[in-house]
Image (cartoon, rainbow, N blue to C red; front, side, top):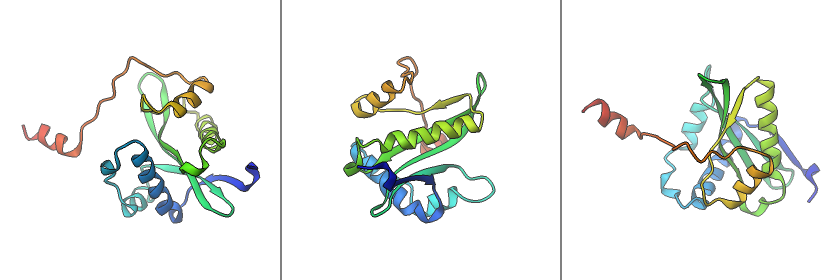
Length: 162
């Protein structure tokens, strides 16, 4: 496969249905399709306006359309400063292991450096061997110490109503 038929570009509103479909495909791959609660309409609302909640890049094949995406947002570390957080990077199954994920990842690294982010972070499931291998190959630090924590909306409401 020649990479000259794949374009990595900034995502726009018309790409959101394809991006949402990729997220659903990723959820199925991660054995959690029932966990996807977001909708195309929510993505459209949350990615526009004066303060978008996220941005994204797409990998677009000249004949097949969008075949991959990387969705990210910015945060702040009190210890390091600006931080780019990669929420999801997914390439449709047929196009995996062809360097497209690496192309998307490289674009994010470029943007993080351009925006003067001091940290770029993301998560990977401990059983996702292909992704872990890619991250190890690029020299990323896979931290075994930190435990991921989160609360759902229901849990937050229950906490405040205790």
